[in-house]
Length: 157
Image (cartoon, rainbow, N blue to C red; front, side, top):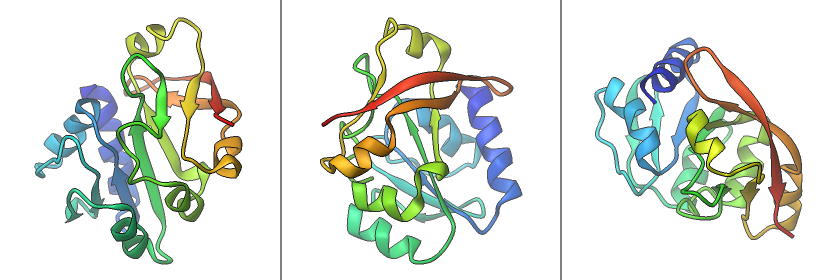
C-alpha cells in the first residue's frame, strides 16, 4: 500500500487546492502517514494542501467543507465483500458522491485484495438507487504506484 499512498500524495501535491476526502480503513492509513497527519482509522478525514482540514467527519460536515470547491474521494475496497461505498464509510453518502462526481472517485486496493473477490464485482450501496446505478459497469482501481486495473463494479438496486 505504500506505493499506492506515494502516488496519491504526489497527485495531492499537483492539486493543492483540491479537498481530498480520505475514506476509512487501514489500507488508506499510509496516505496519512506519508503526510505526517493523524488518521482516524474508522472515520473519514479531509485533507487539502497537505493539511488536515477536518478529522472523523460526518456527511453534513463533508458537504459543508466541499461547498463549490474541487474535491476527490479516496476509498478502498472493504473486507472480502467488495464494498466500495455503503459499508464502513456511510459518511461518504450519495449526496457527497453527487457533489464530488463519480469521475473524482479514486479506488485503491492491492491486487491481492481484488483477487480475494474471485471475480465478483465491487459493490456500491449508498441507499440511493440513482447514485448506485452511476457505478454500474467497469472502474479503474489503483493497485500499485505505477499500475491500475479495470474491474467490474455494480450498484445495488
